[in-house]
Image (cartoon, rainbow, N blue to C red):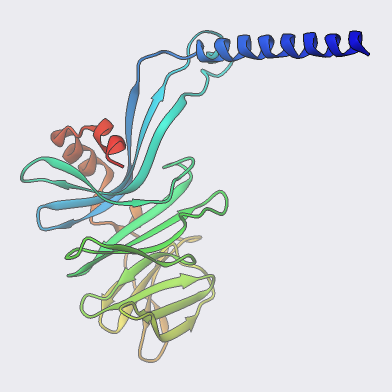
Length: 263
């Protein structure tokens, strides 16, 4: 029995030594220098001189040596955060407006859209690959700076130009609600799920559809759905595009490490 116990202890010791060596080898497969990235959404909105958009900040180390084969390797992410950012275009200053749930595969696995009225920004986020806790509709109040998750279902919402109405699709049902208290106003059955919506005027909503690309107009009074004759707008018809956001952010030279430190 004593010999067996000694043998077990020796084997455990060897296993721990082997694991330690493996861990040292893995840690040595990455450069020590820290790298930061700022991955932004493809669209955003302006509120006076402030440009709002979604972005992920990452701190990571690049692979080296054997860890780069056969496809270049994977970076070692140390810290990251995702949320709503704003850049003051007058003072060239970028700030974190609100933190949201973490994302995996941003931005390539997601579609997102931002739209505003006079007081709020509606944000739609959807992971197109698999279910995700960040999926849903968010409302950010421009006056208070508060953000809330309005719904975990539906995506690409639109806000009425005046008042507090929001419209979004849940499967093939278009829902119109008063977002101040989540009161249902009306619902409309559709034959297809639009790519995104846009409020045309007080009584009409535009439905941007694909396969084939077309724009339909829904009359909120009688529920009639007709062709609009309008051209399909790329990038979900967002006010600010990816190139403009990139230029705005580069001018502000944000301290990405500070965002992570202040989380």
